[in-house]
Amino acid sequence: MAVDIQLLFAINALARSTPWLQPLMQFYATAGGFVVFAELMFVGWWLARSRTNLSAVAAALWTPVGMLVALVINQPISAVFAERRPYLMYPNLMAMAEHSLAPGFPSDHAVLAGAVTATLFMVSRPLGWGAALAAAVMAFSRVYVAEAYPSDVLVGLPLGAVLSVTCFLLVRRDIVRLLGMTGSTIFRALVTNAARARLPKSATCVPVGLPAGRAQPERVVPGLPPLAKFSSVAHLRDAVTTREKVDKTAKITLTGCLDGRSDQEFYGVGVLRLDESGTSLQFAERVQRPGADPVEVTLVVQPGAIFLKPPPGTVMPLRKSWLQLGPNTCDPLYRRFLAMAAALRTYADPQAFFTQYGDAITITDSTSEPIDGARCVRYDLHADMAKAAAANQSNPAIWQALREALATGQTGVDLKIWLDQDNRPLRTLIDQPIPGVCGRYTLDSRYSTWGKSVSIGTPDPIVVIQQ
Image (tube, rainbow, N blue to C red; front, top):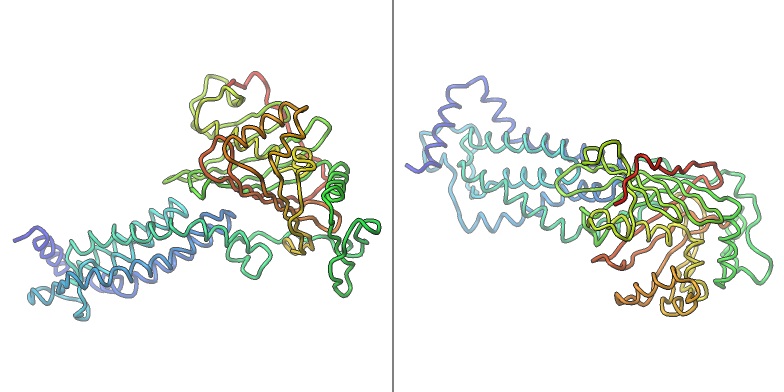
């Protein structure tokens, strides 16, 4: 007798000897298991939206879809094998479920459990382990009630996991992008439970615009002054620069990824400071790693230095807790932060973008588009790198950076910027190739509480090691 059949009869014998367990296993093998997995999927979505992690939210929302996709794909597979249920082949088995003529290999229930478990691991590892336990109980209960052979569930679990995860990876980037567009729509609650940031009511009473000839008014909304749309880059640059020189500081939320890969994704919250020496940022970044929970690092970007505080558990020399990154940094992980710092210096601060690209920038489009309830105008900007490089030959640092970008095949850079009625940036978005990094770098920066005092400290040299 095959091992599969022997194991089936052994578990069925256990079922006969545990009448107290039969009702529970029978319920779980049929309706109860579906209830448990439905609750797990809801918890996964709730956890993901509380973290404001678009990748986790995408995985959580995909979980029920991936479950259905896996079940649909499994139907022709099970039809090919056309395996009859154990109680139809062995009438002496004690069956505790209604008889079904549907083929049983691979088990639909196991495929469902495997699909849900695999995607929940991409939301939260602890939740994934909880789902794995529920899946194991589901698989055992199906054999316990004589609905499936052990091989049916042992194949169904990994099959469901592979089908769901594979399909998710094919569409993941598109889902994340769609979720990123929900911030000002009725679907925002699917992505985050964070409160919307709104302008004070008094802000709607402030006249908007520049002197005649400098701005084109948007359509008038009854009770509200018209928004201004700048028709020239020079006027747009002057408005942004003037506003930033007054405000100087802001809180900033950064979301980014490299080529849509979960192991190259980050989410950070911190502060931004603008002064005569340049742009300074400090933020705590949550880095997503494949098959592991996110870890948090602290990154300080100053005009002349970049400091990184690695996650807990990183092996460091005695009494050292910070790394100073520079041109000689060789570690691939740390070089990634160098590329990130370069992108932040140029694109997280709109003023720096205008400084670097100057007259090489053109406005390709402008339209009214609210951000979290605040009225804004979105400007689509394009910068010609060759033109910018030619204009910056007297600035070696900018010229070298642009030449390196041109050497990688880049010809231009596109930036979207949202300005509120006071010409304060509320959001910038870039999706471009990055020199020295394989793939596209997406950086979404959102700003709040402009003008409030912030503190950006430089690590004590005693605790810093050159990397």
